[in-house]
Length: 330
Image 1 (tube, rainbow, N blue to C red):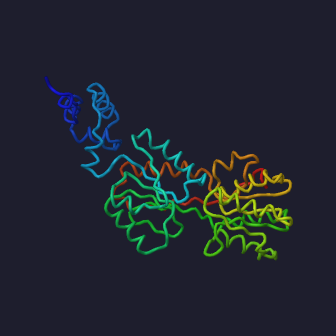
Image 2: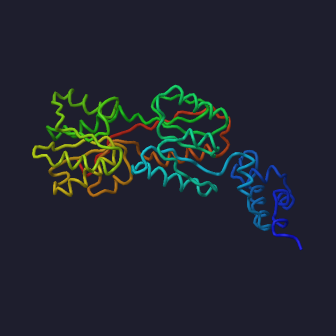
Image 3: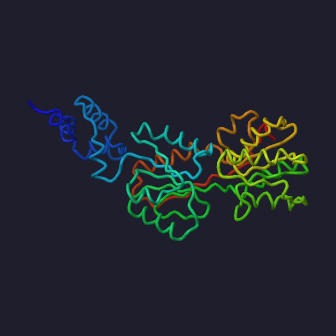
């Protein structure tokens, strides 16, 4: 009596059943079907043959053979940020029908991950302007790692680069608040070497407004830290009536702090964030923000394109200009 393992259908058996080559079966069933080289009718015939035979891919063997594991890795610095969560959800929805699984790499530790395994695609949401780190990124791309990197300054070297133009547009949020408020405060994760905070300072100076340390609170890079900073700023007896936050999650925390302190938003306090996250759009009141429109869906399309026939591509720059989006909170 033969064992179940011996009876397991193989690629060769599927190829014979469909009347095509083993290579064709491999391309179709791996999700790498390319319409300009394999007809849809042929691909359908391969899938039907595989279904009749009960063929299932041996993913463990494939990972050993190719170094890939049907994973799309998302290197995200702040996992609690609604922006990161929205990116993960949208990309996961897009790649799941292709047989891929989206996994998150915490704290931006993408170099360690790429040293040990080769994902089908990796998205990196922050690249430091460090020559050594950039050289490593280029080396991984040269080895065939499919990479999509978020950077305002990086040039594509075998990988795709996404630019947002975020910093030059953040002044729009501050200008919007200054239209109706003499004092605009800021919630920020840092005050030096940070273009989003520089936009606050430069816009106030251009408007002839004083910059007071009493109107600025620095938060730790997570929602709880932002909430504590917002409570500290909004609890002051002489607080600003407009508040610029350098991330949407800080702005959302500020809205919740205002609710806790019984401060009406936007009646007594106008709030604007940065990022245009879905959570901000569905907040009560909905959050005014500066950010790109349709970014997550566009990112998912770029990642899917990297999954299909992009090996050896020189890399492209995708630009997503930011704009001011006025909603109920301001």
